[in-house]
Image (cartoon, rainbow, N blue to C red):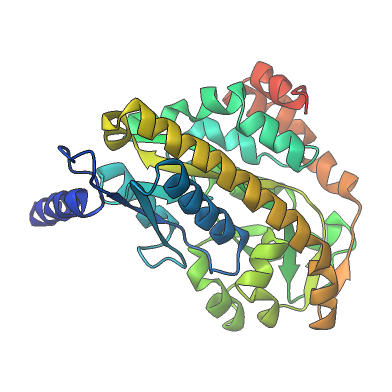
Length: 328
């Protein structure tokens, strides 16, 4: 009971401090906190900075977005909870299907062709329809950014085929889809916050992890891993969330400015990611990682049955077909 009261009081205090307060004059500056969990060297941050700059430009300085990177305000699950209760107005996250289970469709393995395909789906009618479920948690998606296509690292053996995955113990995000996918690959999935991963690898609690190339580089995971398998097996969307009650109270003009600025930040972030991805493999080789390119079809074959059965039932065969057929 006391904990709940404390959280409410915290939310109320931050409500005013972050520009949630009503009754601002025409000449007042609205200061808004925005959080993400990645280092400033990650493309998330480039996009968030561009987002803030564009919002200031479009509003002629009336909207000031303060970006808090590197989990300064908490890890992803924590910041989403704070966004839900109104303590942080804007949050960029890569973990979301525990709130909106249907959104787990977007992280199904081998669902998307490339980054352009993901952008067309996630920032189009399909994404709007699926992510609408965040309204049940006092949140709203205003743009969907990208974490990127995910690769696999470990310390046990090079991955030359999906058969080499068998018996590995890999960290995964706290997501049912991720864990189910890894089980099909023969892996023991071990969900934990990413901040604990390097320590868990060093201590031998897990053999490795899976993440996009730039994530592995930005967080220096390569320093504790020997092998990298480039599989592009799963795509990681990154919804940009706002607290819905707060956003609904903004003027139509300010809502439009924030959405336009978010779309601009999304483009900047994707351009930065595409450029940096090109040199990432060479960087990892220079750092001593053994890089392999296992046959993707072997991985894909193990999840085909899930598409036809469990996942078709869970997400809807029509939705899966709509995503796969989206033009880009």
